[in-house]
Length: 251
Length: 355
Image (cartoon, rainbow over all chains, first blue to last red):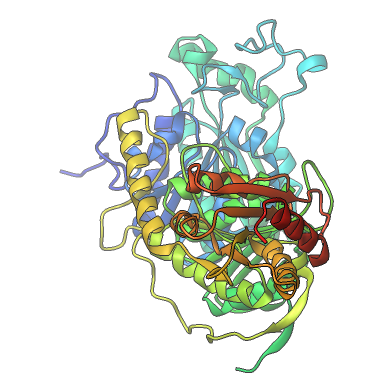
């Protein structure tokens, strides 16, 4: 019999603590599939952040080291500079990457650090109970925007892929989503490409994943997955924002 | 090797490289820039080495954390306001039991303060500095030669006890030039530290973490850290004594202040006053036993610091009521001359009827 589906080798046999409908578990699995397929399990180091995914090390069967809030890109810089043979990825949420860690992220990208970032954008602070994130949509109600995010008072959702794509040190940026089978397939391809960029020493690579958070969005899983398409992807359009290999082909 | 004339900051850089430091991450701040520049010159283009001028002190200390994770000897340096920013990372290094060397060339504070030498970060350095219950080893050099020697010792201690080590200097030490001899050549290659995370090859995957949702697990981590701290106290506490044998008054001072005090003591001795000096070399662990021991032969102490009185609390804790402790301090970056301290010593000496 042909085996067509099984648990990735680099995904531990543990029960996810994530809520039903959450995008983290899908993203974890996809990363592990890519790690297996690219043969990276023994030479990769993952950096999870504080947040819901702080426990990512309970699921990834690869070396992992927790970072302080927002400092993933700086930690990965130190790792890669000290030991360039390792493949390193940070796994960061929107508060982590686009709030407290904006400086670390932008400067690591600008230096063209040979690291890969998986950026989970769910428009909300998940673990702390649903406060406004830098990526919270306008009008969206959170526990700290009980009247809805008003851009006059609370600012606009920040678009990290667009911002980072402007930097010369960046090799590859794509925004994807994990809310449908076809989007999930695209996400996996993007993750593989991001790691490939690192292996080819092309510079900073990032995959931004629009990820449902039904619990804090106060929606059912199905509603949340629809909302990603109908609301989130309008503010954060999916697609490739930078790809240095593509540019080369065009030349 | 013969002696060379060097400023203190550069001497730390050279000593660090000779101690096998291959990674330096820093951010400009006076009065320690010569160290960052020295490392840029010697590490940024060298194979197997790394120098990054980070976007912030926070980023720099987290780069150190990353480099230490994979087993490299790594260092960062700054001065007081910058060290405050690094405290987050120092707390994580302590929690994860990762070695690192952090240099603080102190300047006057609080706030942006001044760029002149001060000793006002003693509390911050010796009490952990960041959040959580932890300690770092703190070394207090008082000459350029000692900056070099203690830098080498700092890397050894950091690896031996898997702990961040702070070198607590000041603006004078960093800037002044003195002859210095480097007693060791740089090692060709250091063995890979056993707890390095370099990929799960030939072994199960490992995690380095600080967060746990289980308070009893965290309590055990704290206990294990403190068991190591008591071992450090037992094995690594060091201090220098100077003319204490017949002393009726002992000055206790660290770093550059101890250097000033020595000058003052020589003047006082020339006038026939029996003065000695105790200089803690390790500020944490503090040489409690040595101070206690002195109280058996001397009843009067004078703590002299370039701050409003911080180490004096450790002296008082060590003495636990034995002997009398007086204090003289100048904060804000003011550097008192030996003659000024000599006057303080002699006044106290006569006031207390020690003559």
